[in-house]
Length: 379
Image (cartoon, rainbow, N blue to C red; front, side, top):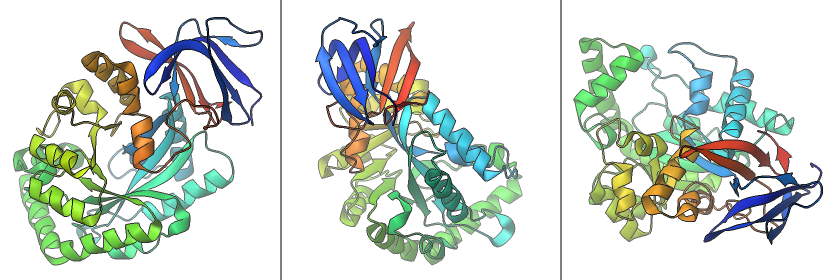
């Protein structure tokens, strides 16, 4: 563990308020929080910068982006994982649930299997002490696939699977109710012709009809076997939320309508939205605005989704909307930690993990000036 570190003359963001004081890290945990503006000998003078808990990221596609930086390019995995780890640390993220798709479509060489070997490589780096931050797995169980059951069987309770999300990307519903939006997305990403896109849509609908119900039931059962939190994805209607609740889901990723978000709230299901949606002021898929949900009190957790640096940026954007910085910081720290059962992090309190971020502001933009993971400076 690192030597004792004290961050003094800091605006320390606690769950329900902000104090000026000194936060001391020792032996990997928060050793003390003391109010007052004095700078003890040997302490780091933060000059009024904020000190917040390390960010907790539940859903990021960033690892997939590093492994396949261009369509069809398979980058060396260990190098990709280390680059991903370093990027998240630099963005203030000290705990991440790495999203990996399980459920492939080998016919027609559409989507190849990759989760099990990458998870094993990630575990090897973890065992070697090569990672800067804390990593868990988030298995995105694609029910509209051919191989979901076989792929999920390759994981077990020792694999640090923290989340299993039920994904259904069958065209014409949920995220891509508007096929024109789906076509634009797929054409840009995969370069499909009109005929290839039509074949793609037909094939996915066929797979959902043949395998969907069995895959969904298997994913729910496997999440229980792993001891993982079960999440829904892109709920659109109250009826879909009712099914999610019946499965025991307690985390809803990116509900696409106010109706679905309201139903989640009524069922006690935590609502997670994407940081890019907040920064852009709307969904790239044409779905509900995260800011709209925030104004309605229907937003609990933020995920960086596909832009790691957006996580902290979005929290400060919410702080201006709500005029409440502690509340906004909770959406990227306390709330995601609680949603996944991590009681040792996500807030600044004596005895908890020393996962801490020092943040300044330049023209309303947060600027990270230091990141500590278990008391070790990693960014």
